[in-house]
Length: 236
Image 1 (cartoon, one colour):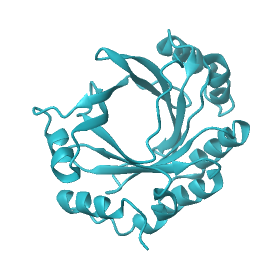
Image 2: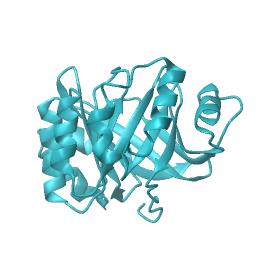
Image 3: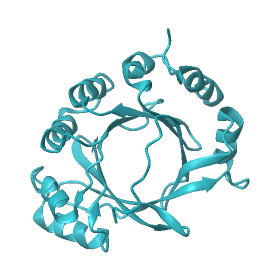
Image 4: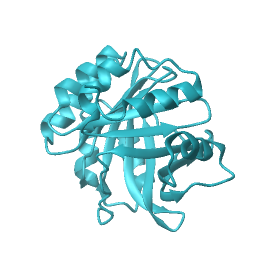
């Protein structure tokens, strides 16, 4: 029996003209627990995961090309804080490396200590703390690579478009990326946003989980399909 969600993934892949066959067998064991789809103008990503599955997720990420530096950092975070929800995001067309996620939910200072363990410069961590202010909680971490170097995505709650959403700042060992991203929660399907219209047409959705925006990239829409996770809006 095929896991739930595969038909939707295949339908979306057909709409984009992307071959999803190499990805599905790797992700199939996790899809019944969680499935979220992230669409942009050029392609889409599959996000899946669960709790207590860190080694299996890391193996899946390795099979899909994620370097050991990111997998090792993720496994260390999951071992130190094992109760967090874990995730894996994969770009179906292979435009970017996979990302492994840990729903950290730690006081900001304690969360930033995790980054110091990954040989991220102390000056970078200090500057990151200032960028994430006034947040008091590090909501989540994402581990990926860029040009072979560990790249960490940090997430905090913030006010976005009049409601509680997310803000994300990304760092490497020696610098903070200046392309900060905001995630509008529970966004309506905007008729002026082509990628939102595609989500509505192909997936039949009438509302979006999040819409991500940044200065340098086009919008991306997120739609949870299986195992929706409630945002703890009190974790500011």
